[in-house]
Structure formats: structure tokens, C-alpha cells
Length: 417
Length: 89
Image (cartoon, rainbow over all chains, first blue to last red; front, side):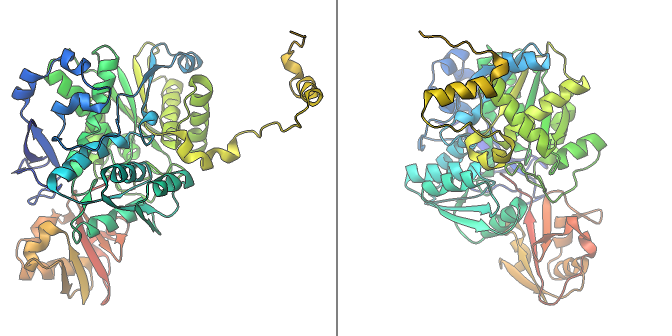
């Protein structure tokens, strides 16, 4: 049973039957899934959700999915109270939404789970996508589990960890000499010639709905409350707009009393078209990315216009971090909270720090930082910025000597026990 | 003549064909010449003389917004792609 009614153009409001399209034929605006909220309101309660599966399928009534799913058990990831990081920064109520522990180790399992369900319903036998890495991992994994053909397009300079993980699932991996915007353009053209389920192109309206669950889960895990502030990594702008949509859908369903969340966008300085537009109060201008942060490196963000609107509507803000800030952000989160994130996570931690330094964040604000990918995927970026291990022979005397010399200032007590 | 690749929703201006061969020495001229044969094309992709927000145009795979936009030069063997703005990651 689905509560979906139609597709609707976000720009001009034209409506379309449910089908594998993502663009309005009249104005080229993005199509979005429409639901029968009256029906949902009658059938969905907090208790129903709390008794649901420990995955994003607990929100199935609010997603455009049918009975066919390829289930890797995505979602319902931990909301981690980050007291150590909070103390370090002088904050009091800080949480990490740790979405790096999904089945393929990023939030992309949410959007892929939803779009693959739709691909099966439409009768596609081939999955495809343009990806900066995390999506590639997830689409390839879902294709393997669903026994579907798979074509994945990535920029050729992608992090090795993401390439190896993708290849392990056995897809056809097309490595394109160009940046993500080149890959995306190629795939958009290819989608006009091949009858495949390009999850983030012709299935985009369904795909992007999966991100709403990152809004729902945080509300549920905070005890049916919205945070005062959410810091979100931004590439295309889709994730940020969908988290905001998720908060507001729970408000419309009376599952939460209010939404007063200041939405904060986070990008790397080497690719920050949305932050730049926000700070200069201007339209978004395309840029050529130049950053160690590959997963957010979208120079021409299609949902940027709507992401900017959310920043303004929510009284939010935006900030960009340098490559060095990103690396320091990764290390800070790992050292304080035991969470090892990829470069996109380094970006959001750098934004958190920046807001504290600028005095823009109140120490009592209930703040949620969205960590969307796992550090094991981008180890190459970090390798030159962490200390070497201390190498010794398997000999107690040598170990004692190391403690006496290298760690003399720590005054380690040695006694027989 | 330049080759113009059209996104699916624009193929009603090309009798359903995915590609057209069109004369023109600038992008603006090429768009004008498509509009002459398929009236309404220009209004579909331009607004107040600028490329609409949800449209991306590439000449030889380069986004014209990063260059000269509608005044971009177009050579005889160039390829122009007119596509919807979609992005994922």
C-alpha cells in the first residue's frame, strides 16, 4: 500500500503520473513526489513508527516505495551524544548523527534503497548512476543483492577506497576523465539513450525522498523534538532540503510540536557555490571544484536554489572549510568521539568549529551534526597528516626503553603485577 | 553545421530526434535557428535573454555558464548539449 498520489513540479506546480521521470516538461523544474497526507495522518502514529523495523523502513508509509525492496537494512543509525567534542568547543548539547555505519558506510544507502524499490516496480533490469563515490558504493551493493545489471560512472580521480569498495560488488565501473559535473553531464545525456534506472537522474524524485529519513530519525531519537541547529554537508543541496522537508512533514503530521531549527550548510572552500551565494546574497554561480573533498565537489548544484531558500527560511547560516580545516575536523572528531569520518564529515566539523569561533552558535543550542560517510573510504587524504606508528622488535626491554624515552613526560608507572 | 543534442523533453522541437544539425556561429544563433523551425524552443530554454535556471548548456562538453554563455562561439564540427539541471553525488 502506498500513499503516493503523483509527481509535482516544484517550480510551476504541473502534475504528472508516477513514472520514471524527474524533470517537468513545461519548465524543466525538478519533480517531487506528492502524498495523500490525510491518509498518512490517519494511519501513522508515534507508536506505529517506534514499533517498526530498526531501519528506514519504519517510515515506509512516508516513502515512495511499494512491496518490492532490496533490503540491506539501511538507516536507523545512532544519534551519538558528543560530550567530549562539546566540552572541547565549549558547547553543552551536541549530537552526532552517525550515518557512516550504514550497510555501505554512507547515507547514500537511504536514497538508493528507495530508488531501487521504485526501479523494481517500474520493471528496470539495470541500475546506473553518476557518483562522487558513496553513491557508487551503494548502487553497486544494491545491484549485487538484487541481481540487477549495474553501470556506474565516477570521476577518474576518486578516492581509492571508494573505487575498491565499488569494484568489490562487481558492477561495470566507468571511470571518466573529468570532474563530477562532467560525469553528471555525461550520465544525463546517456539517460536519454539507454532505458536504465539512473537512480539520481530519471529516478531522482524517488531517490531524493530517502534523505528525508535523516530528518525523521533525528526527531525520533531526540525524543520527538527537532534540534535547535542542524549542520549538514552540502553537494547538490538535495540532502539539506530533504532533511528540512522531513522535519516539516513530522510537524504536519503532529508528530513534533515545532520546527525552529537553524539549518547550516557546510561546504569545502575549494567547491562552495552555495556558501558563496549565501554569504554574498546572490544567485548561485557555477565553479570548477578544486578540493580534497570529492564527495561534495559539485560545482553546479542543481538543488542549490532550494538549499539557499531553506537557509533563509530557517534563519540558518553557511560556512566553508579549507582542506586543512577538513583534515583537522576529521582528526578532532576521531580523537574526541571515536568516530572516524570521511572528508565530508571533516567539512561539517570544521563548520561547527567556525560557528563557535564566530560566536554564531549559542552554547546551549541543541545542535546536531550530520556525519554522512565513513573515514575508511578516504584514508588516502589523511595519510600524510597523521603521525607514524612506533616500530619496535617484539622485545620487552625495547618496549621499556621506548616508554622511558619517547613517553618520559607521561610518567608511566612500571611495577610487577 | 554544429550537432545539437537535445534532452528528451525538448525532442518535440526535433520531431522526436535526439540530435539536430544546425547552422550558427554563436550559441545564440544556433538557438535562434532551432526556434525558426520549431517555434517556442527559445522560450522553453531562455528567460529574459538568459539561460533558464533549470537548463544547462554545454559546447563541446564545457558548461557555457563558466564561459561566454549565449555568446559562446560555435564551430562547424562542435557539439552542443542542452540538458536539464540534475545532480546527485
